[in-house]
Each structure stands twice: as C-alpha cells, then as structure tokens.
Image (cartoon, rainbow, N blue to C red; front, side):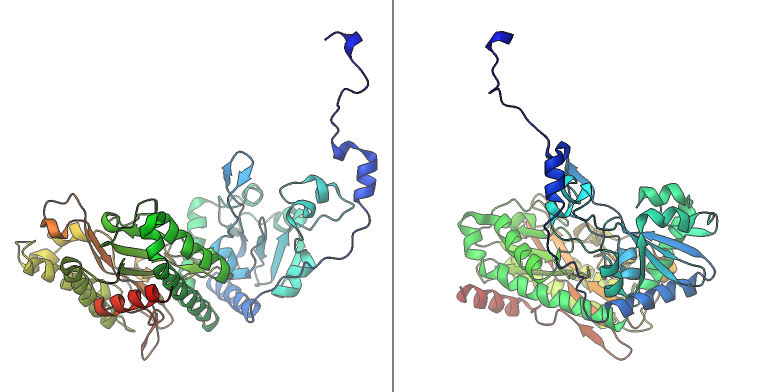
Length: 476
C-alpha cells in the first residue's frame, strides 16, 4: 500500500486513559457503594488480646508484621491472596499489602492502601487493584471500624518506622517495602516467628469456635463427597470428588485450608497425593484428607478412608481395623500433662505389634520401637499428629521443647492421624495388601478435664464407615 492508498477511514486505536473526555466523564456520576468490612463477633477483641500477649512476651520491643502479597501465577495473573497467618492472628485483617506496627508500649497501628476514588487514575486505570476492575474495596475507616484499631495510609509507614532500627523486629521476606525500611536479621526474624508460634499453641475460646466451625463444614463436605461416588466411578474420578469438596469449602468458608488429598485405590498409600487425577473404581478405598478453611482462615484437617461402594474387602478391613486400634490408643494418650510424643508412641506401638503379628516384621517389639530399629516406619514414614489452627501444620516455628519435646496443655488443638501405607509395588507385603492405604485423622481440643473430639460426627470404625457411605449413596 502506498501513501496515496491510505484513507481517513483507516482504523485507529486510542487508550481511554489518554483521552481527556473519558477521564473527565469517568470521574463523575458515581453513587455510594458499600465498602464495609463484615467480621464475626469477637474477632476484634480476640486480635487485641493476641497483640497484648505478644507485647507481654517481647516487652519494650517495636514490632512490624506484614500481610504479604499474592504470588504471581503466570505472567500478569496472580494466585488468590491469602494473608500471613501471624498477621491475621494479630489483626483479623486480610488486606493485601497491609502492615501492623506495634509500639514499645503495645499501641497498634495498621497501615493500608487507601481506596482510590473515581477522581483518581487508579480507580479506572489499575486493572489489579482499581475498584472499576475488581469491585468495592474497604478503606481505612472501614477497616478501623471493623477491627477497632487505628488505620493509617501505607504511604506513612516509612515515617512510622524511621529510626527504629535496631529496636524493631519484623518478619523478613513478606513485604518488600517493610524489608527496605527495617533490616531485621534472619536470626531476629526467626525469633519473632518462634515467639508467635509458641503463643499460638494455646487457643482462646474464640479461636476454638472458629475451629469447630471449620470442622463442622468439613464434615458436611465429606458427606457431599460420599454422595458423588457413583459419578466419580462413572468417569469423574478423583477430580470430581476434589471439586465436590472444594465447592462446599468455598461456599461454607474461604476455601480449602490446604491442597486436598483425594486418593483412590493405589493412590491411597501416597502420603501427599494432591494430583487427584486418577480414576475411582468399584472396590477402591478412598482416602480423603481435606479441610475447610473458615473466612477467618482457621482450618480443619480431617481424614477418613471409606469404601467406594460401601463395603470393605477382607484385606482392606484387616488394615483398617489395625489403624483404628492405633487411633483409639492415640486418643487415649492425649491428655493434659502427658508428653507430646505420648500419643505418637501409643499409635506406633499398636501398629508395630500388629505388623509383627502379621509376619511382616521378624524382629522383637523392643527392637522395632528402639532408636536403632523402627523398621515398621517403612509403612508409616510420617508422624501421627500436629497442631492445627490458622495453618494446617500450625505453630511449626516453635522450639522443640515447646512442641515435640514438650507437654500437652489445655487449649491445644491437635490433629491425630495414624495410618498404614502399603504401596502397590512394595514386595515386602503379600499381594492382597499391596495398594492399600488407610488413615484416620481426628481433630481434637485438649481441655483440663477432657478431650473434645471435634470430628465426632464422622464414624471411625470400619462398620460405621460402611454404613455412613451407604447412607450417603442412598441419599442421592
């Protein structure tokens, strides 16, 4: 084409942001929107109590904790944002990019990005954060009203922490702006995480209610999955069951608390089977390890292993019954004042003795359970429990003496989860046992005088699970 061939009708492209008419027109004519933050009763008071505990544990220290930012998934798309657990514990806030600053005397200020109004370019030009693109976003006053905490623009953060070094602690690697302002050493950052983890071991009443809510929703989701077993067998497979659980989790809470394990048949012995892309066949057992995360980000962590058509085979029941015996021994060992490791030892003794009685292990029980033995761990290489809370493996930054080498205390919330895992290519077990994986995982709360089993609405006996599965299949 020559210049003579061009006409005034040649299409042209204009960016609205560069057009004066668009910018003037888009800035007016907008009515009010609801930016309020809805939080459950007691959240603001619980967060204030948590901040007081931290200030008491680190007296005279200035502290900054960041919410973090969504990681990039690919190119210009991000994963969904999930705020840092320590930040949520201290604030109840889930605003991306927010930073909490605690003064030496415990006064708290939350620094956040203020919402851009229609007269600001970010309102319409910022596809990641602008309200015209993503909908109404709570502002400083909205967060302050909901959380009962002073809120200031994030632009004021530099002035707030200036001169704090080396008297300020923070958690490196969460928020680049904070890292540039406060150069906390990795050692100090780890010490802060450790302090927070150990404080979070003991749940208050509000936190326990959140966990009860998470477990109740998870129990419903397990029932949803059982009802969908025929569709999974017809071809939907593990993916169908995962989607079923995830739908309930997203409806009843924030979503799943961790990557769900939906392991059918030969996948059941794989401890972290999160691909969930296999078939579901008649005769399979389904090992479902999944938990709903509440909107306040507390998560359940529940496992049941149940037969796809409502009846265990003799070999499946043999393995299940031994794991059930180990679970009862574990639960009986969870009590105030007991060593934390006691419930794991109880489960391992039952499992080791059972495997030896089956002829799979030809050494004495004392050798099996001794430090130089442990041959039974081939079939249960993982542990049998952990803390639960805001993280599925909660409080992992605690010192050994405050966790595995410590004692059980009132207010702890635990997952108790013995299992046996016989991989399909494991030639140390007879053919009928190969490809069988069984895990039972209950969520419990330790009280001074009793053990509260939050997952009590889900059966744990083989006969109980068979009946439970059939009842859901018949309810379709």
